[in-house]
Image 1 (cartoon, rainbow, N blue to C red):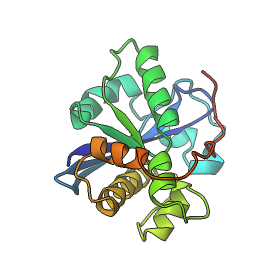
Image 2: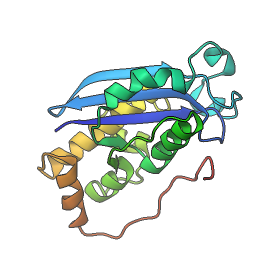
Image 3: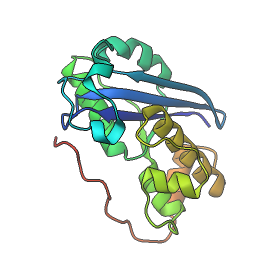
Image 4: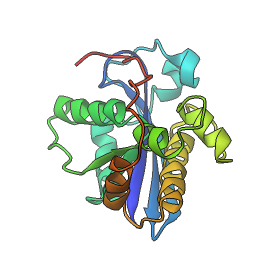
Length: 192
């Protein structure tokens, strides 16, 4: 099974304010490549340093996302994408590409929040840090590369748990599992 897990950290409530991107590339069920870059956000001001520790000084000379996109785009390579809270990460990527006049990314997205709720309902909550702790997945939370790798490993654990070999098969297997869908625990940091 091949897919790419992705995570963004943002500097402020604007969805275009990516200040870090992390990627974990999964090939044949193994994380084979990890990628992390700081990004100069647009707009370039910080309100979320207390969450991820990234400051304006750290990104002052970093590339903006448009300059970094030629390096990021090949890693995604039309693969299915995985994120822990796909609504946030998918929205950030879509709005940022639009901001820079870049074509949208046409890839299916899968959410490890939703996956973990169904596959691991016994966990007290389904925050990335909680799920990784219960599955013994190393995590440096709110570091984009580590968060992306954490989401990749959650997806791999779920695939193994349900004995399926693709994200599409996982989604179908999850749809058959019992239990109500719980409301999403994240509050949006930005509004569409």
